[in-house]
Length: 469
Image (cartoon, rainbow, N blue to C red; front, side):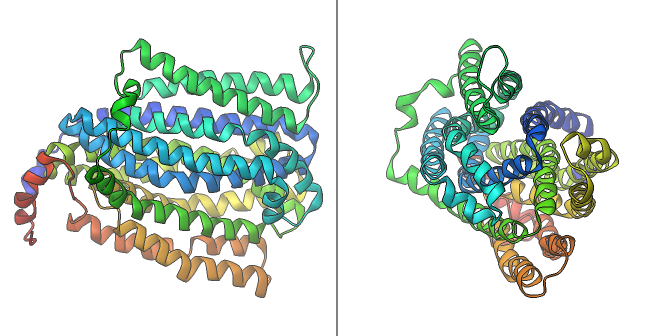
């Protein structure tokens, strides 16, 4: 084990991390930048429009939590099968992932377009903000299936190391969104001025551009896996069972995490309007930080999962340990940069006075809490890509529902503490979980291959660490 550490190929490792991580980070930053531009372009319509847009984003974040379990499970299979070059396994896994993700997106599409009053009533009791959100949801709901479709394709492309295609598609989508925002929000080029509904229409059309661009570029590059529809649905009972057994803990994790976050957002949604508006802008900036970080998290999943699938288990173990600290450091640096620039950023996004103060406090707490939180995230993603979908799930759900949810509800509805204190308790579980996740990381027990090569190499790996088979 010492020899492995001494001969660790740092140059090759950092190059591989950058080749995958930077394009994905850029793609995510482009998507988040579009959200920031949405907020800035909606800001002249008033702070309540900004707050409504933020609450609608929380609803789409709940959808994200509901389908992300299938993305995590799918990438587990994509990356490991890619490492062992099993094309049939990649095709089947993509088909199952796509079907499950699209089912989730259609449910949220129906909720947004047919029951927007119910959705907004859940997130806030402020009628002025809710009525604006209803107008937005009725249109943007049609974007959800398109957004999820592009996410499924992007996950497959990332796991098979074709990260430039989704990045370029995002450039086209974001450019379209910004242009159409200008046209439809303010009524340019002869179009009617639709206000908040114009922002929703622009988002929906841009989502369609993203899907079309990915397919077009994948066809030009001769990328095979998106164009095997028969193979996508050639499932056997054994394959389907293996897929859902691996995905189920991740799905459960993301679903309960989404519900827990919804409880937090509902609690904060009962705060004064200035706090709600500050929170809306903070969530957009949080997305900017997470989007950048998620690029390197995706790279970590691919770099470790690929090695596990290829049977290179010692390399996977050594890579994982370094990735946790490296990615956390990158995230913290980005967070500090956003914090330093918070003045002009918050002002540009339409905040002033009490709303500005609330946004600043949310950012200050988040940047330092996120250093630990993202360490937990990168470890969980690494475990999942390596076949262990249970450990991170159990720790995250248990600590959230034993510590975070009760603390937020008590501080918000019983003790009526200030909003920043409620927000601080949102992270009370992270240090405890970090210690437990670190212990699991160094044990190496998270390496659980699904490929033939990986399974064959597992006994020697465990014997080296004195573990029973």
